[in-house]
Length: 173
Figure (cartoon, rainbow, N blue to C red):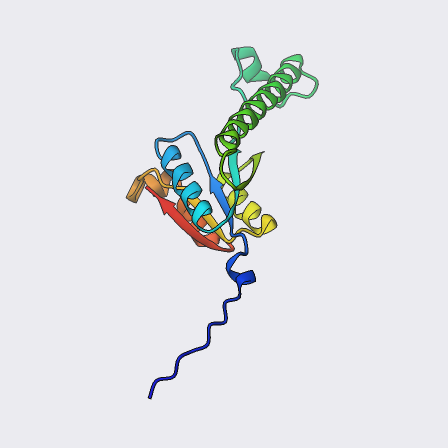
């Protein structure tokens, strides 16, 4: 004899807004990742956190003299390189914030809470750390299609996230 299990879902549990972290980059899968995350957020009455990680953006030395002087204490070339690096980081961060703000604006007509964040660092680690601190229920991340030797050599953000995330991960191709 089978016995029906009582429904333990209350309206409060069902209506809990799912937190979906959307890891974006500038690859070809970016639009698909954004669309899939938006569809999920609508279906789950979710909240979105759009994020993008800037990797190391230190400019290369412009001259042979700068290259030779890197690491030499007090070199005017080293100081110039540091200033250019800081200016470039600031510029790239502002561009990224503007891009994420524009994606947020695209969703303004939908009944969704949309936040965004950006940081300079290693992408996989940043995504997992943000998922932990924001208490994400799901991470949506794209996959560039690397495999085998190229993945081993270049690394894979999606692979890192799948193995280190504090929550479920949806990998979109």
